[in-house]
Image (spheres, rainbow over the protein chains, first blue to last red):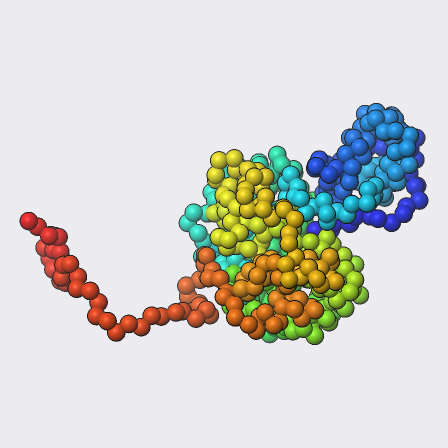
Length: 103
Length: 403
């Protein structure tokens, strides 16, 4: 098991104003505390320790930007900075990929 | 992504909707007779799950979103439907990591494995030399494992695992193990010797000595980032800093085991009726056992530290491995038999009763290493109700009382 809870303070290098998706090889399993994410390609496990963050992640696919996903998931202004940090960690471990508009 | 101060380990103590790490022993049949086999494998159990039943389990795992299963045995590849089940699982998005001694990893099998993104392979090797390995795993097993790794490397399989059970005789070979793994592009995985299954019979002579535990800990601290441990060594964290991983006994909380006949146990090292939670053939299947069995619900209750509560390392080691305590006859709420603070040694030296095994599938051709108790009696056997029938008696009614 490569459980790697990331507790380092992170500099958000995550563009909230772009469109993001879960990586196609990532599975999401809701749990009472939040969710588990598993990437079949990298074989890494990640954790969402918050149901609100899970809603944001689930809203990404249908939202034009990550910021819109936060709003769609009902996140308050105060929540957005910590969600951004969490999304940045997910993007860095390839759990999220940027979605580019199709031709 | 810590958004709350709660630690994951605290969240996991209450259990999950489905296991993260599920071990599935597909068969008790094995071509080897390793002296420390956790599951006392050798002979196939006639009640083994059929192909259809095994597929039904996979369907359930898919529905529960169990991301991957660790398949073992016995030697799983000797099941004739092994490849069929492997393909079925991966087609249903249940990833498979399987442990093998390498006997069926031919060049062709290796190519097949390398082509499947959802499969990971783990080759067992318990000595960096044939001498050390074969003493535990049997003659020829070193060559078999290395041939399998060569086939996997040749097929382009990347990052497969080479898994080592750490013993008194191989702790000094850790650097050599890494060199072998590097040679084949494999990742080294080290695990703890457990006194489970036939391991109970050899644990006293094979488990690492106290100074070797320190050596292992130091080696893991230095090389831990490149080595997998399956969270095996959390009892070593009482040496100082925690090792990478959850450092939690996951039994019934995040891990469990399904055995070849469908019995569900709390962890891979606890194949004993004391830790039997149910069977996948029961109504409600595996999900019912995982979510509602009395045993698992009990394991998810906050555990009492007992004799360990006053120890300053209790928070990191949590009293160590439940199975190791059980099979060495130590109280479950006390220290681990290999407690690095030395609290287990006095208990091991004192009076204890090692539990009798509740099952055994060992080959019958290998004499048991466990002493067999024999009762010698001087009293005469009771007189039989009917005289014994001679083998030469030709009458079909011989021995049957006829009025």
